[in-house]
Length: 114
Image (cartoon, rainbow, N blue to C red; front, side):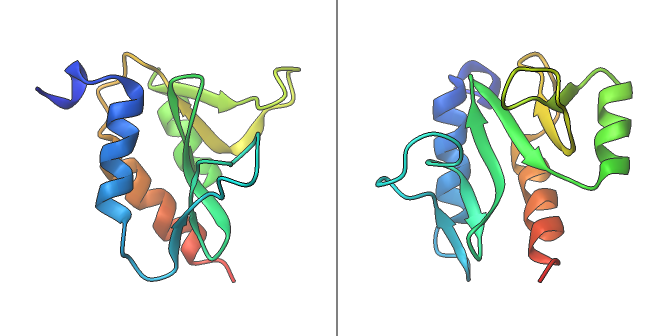
């Protein structure tokens, strides 16, 4: 089964497996509900998560601008009230972008901040 044939949850589970065991990378707490409860994090800061069957990654604003302009996704609106997050991309379900590559970009971006 190719990645595009898998469900969004199956694809995200594959990401979890890829990042499991990496230094300082954790999966959100099962004790926490809501935003980020099952997100991939580095040092407690989210870099990738699944929200409404869409991969959401934290990337530099310029990179998000490029991906949005290319039609690969949109800025993340977690409250669904029009307040968009400039450094967060919500990937379109039809996007051909590689989830692992984008998540690695997110890890590098978030991980570079102290």
